[in-house]
Amino acid sequence: MNVRTIDDLRQNVNFLFRSVLGHVRRPACPDCGPGDHRLVDRKYLVARLFECRHCCLRFRHPADDASGLNAFYQSAYRQEDGITTDLPSVAEWKHMLDKGFGEKGVEHYVSLFRSFFPERDPSDLRLLDYGCSWGYQTWQFRNAGFDAHGFEISVPRASYGRDVLGLPIHSSIRELTPGIDIFFASHVIEHVPSPRKLLEQGFEMLRPGGYLVIESPNGSEEFRLARPAHHRKLWGRVHPFLMTPEFYRRWLADRPAYLSSHPFDDLALDFGSWDQTQTMFGRMDGPSMLMITRKS
Ligand SMILES: [Zn+2]
Image: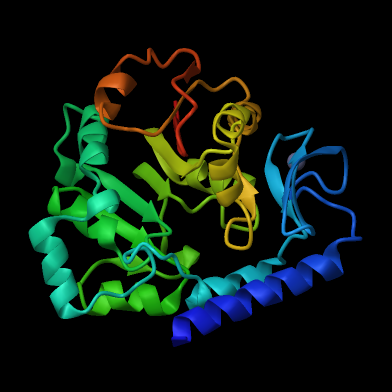
């Protein structure tokens, strides 16, 4: 058994232990408190997924506290896709440059972001890649000509991006200045202590006319009913939250948005069909969900 397998096993046992201990506590939405909620799913007997009836966020119970989450994301957080959390060797990095970034390629986002501001040069667009890990997407955005910066709370991953790849990756929220044209967070919101606060923070940092672009696992009921086993994999120890379309609709209030789900092959074209005056729901049966709104 290798070190990583042992580490994963230890974290899973720890999660089960915390789940048993926390089972009798009252489930609570991070923003609305222990109010009205409904049971959506359960796994490992003791871990449950609830939906807050007030804000429609789906949250795992028992929850993690914010300091535990911060410590976890410093180095213990791992994804087994070979890129999200693995710092590449020189040979692996060269391989990515030669062969592309696979599922983490941002070609569809490059086309989309160019379509946001067709009259402006990408080098003039401030893009923040929030929760960028070691910068594999920040690098691609910069390579496509955008003035892209990254933000990452994991000090080892941010340091790698800065020191090895020379990327402008910030580790302190205080280093980020407002006036951003595109606030982009891909598979980040399902990890943070309060998804609502991330949306508010991102929106606050936009300049007027800027776009908030949030991709996350799809927590919609449509996806759960169509693919219950896949939906169950999307929440658990590593993902304490799932966003629903209704969660976004309530946060947005009267502000229009574009919502859709994977696949994103014709993203720029599909987004172009949104008139930006009312919320448009595309297909909601894919595993990843995308929400885009604009600051007027
Ligand atoms: Zn709530």
